[in-house]
Image (cartoon, rainbow, N blue to C red; front, top):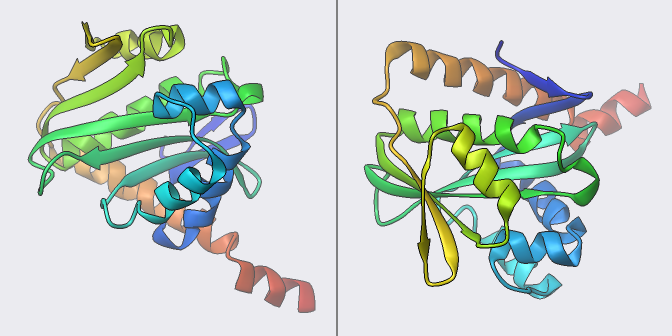
Length: 193
């Protein structure tokens, strides 16, 4: 099934024209959820700068959307200069959407994206008290180990196949249609009609 729905939510890739949705989601995180996402307390100015730089890092971001708002995000970021080798995954879920299965679904999308980009090792760093993220990583059989007060999860994605590439392409095309339908110019045109 190319589109995933969890209690009315749609999970899809975020497009480069939607950076503000990612930023707004991160800004809505409560203090503890923000600390879990970034591994430290960060202010709004940090979040603004972080969201602005996602294009520079060539991040792949999936979001869980209820209507036009994104309430959870998973980010895949390369480590180094190319996708071949290591990559990092990071997750954030707004408090009222936690414990709904959305984190598990997002990790599945990130693993597929990493696989299709030839990533050899996928890392997920989280604070040692972030048991939710550790449970999600274990669902995908990640190896967990402690490193300087953090827990690091490591996965080795399978090699890409025509089926895995097709699956992501189909997800992307459906997600693109959903993003276009949500594009502000189209909304203004529809309201004027």
